[in-house]
Length: 459
Image (cartoon, rainbow, N blue to C red; front, side, top):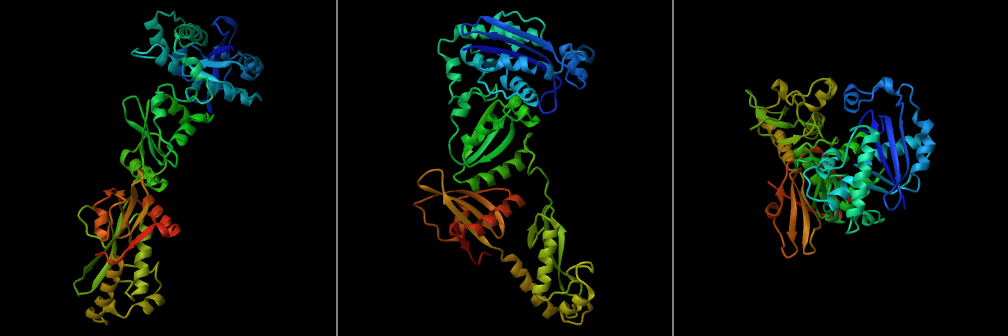
């Protein structure tokens, strides 16, 4: 068994859009003796940002005449193949080298070891596990910091120390096929991953301060979290995951549908940094009614504001307009008294629908009877519960839709026999509704009618 200790300097933080400016490799045998080494500047074929030049000391002029990576790719590949790829925060270096080699036609597939993760296990108790701080605490010489050669020298000395102190065999355990040590981000304790269940639910990625930076849903939490770190993606999001994730937590949800609902509410509530989907503000619109100065009941659409009483609410203006147009057609209401303009109902259709209320030819009493029927119809929106398996064997999950809107969800004991619709509300936790959830639940109810309990005559 041989180890390849690797360090690189780059033009940016993620491999998909950045280049390597310097690479250093030292090959160690099983006892930790250096048997081969390679080091070279690399022309990244792109400008090096000024702040990186200041950090590393590598300027555009220094790499102008350096070899392209493709010129050294074969040599790099031969040094790395059949070796254990070792680096401090290994997934960063590995993603760049693997990506660059793949571009040159070489597929790198090696086991990996992260000296950050190994150090946390073999020499615990240090305030910081950055390479510089760790070397300072352990009296390891670290010269030429932020240069590939200097950082590789320091990492070699650190790894040699880890080999010497690994009385519990953490290095061997990390190399086992079933171990997740090779793929987990450097700052995530393996105990966080080990506690993840094989059940539906939501999972949370936390940063160093404990703040939630990503929320996801899963049919199988452990498999889904593992997939985040097991793929070879070189995108910015993956690299940011690796750098910023320090802890993983989760909540079991009983069913995949509950997990999807919980994810949506959590994204809206927490606004996590690395979630992009569903992060938009929603405006609520509603249909209102009032009696005008001539005694006619009018219907209209307003944007929802605090304290406003609505007959029904909609997450999109077009949905409110479509519902109002349907009421006009179904109950022979006057389009003008419902503020539906000529662009939506032509004059011929207006004459068909309107019985003269807008011109006071139809008495308010007869018109208002139809308007009240329309209002009652609008208020009589479907209420139902989606009943499925729970987290525990002696319970059922319940997702409640009340008067056309998502109300909440929770778990009900198998021993309880609920008979009245209102009883279901006592056993679920209310959640804030959004259009994603409502559309999801109505689609699910249509697809799986056997799991639905319909409620009638909800007032």
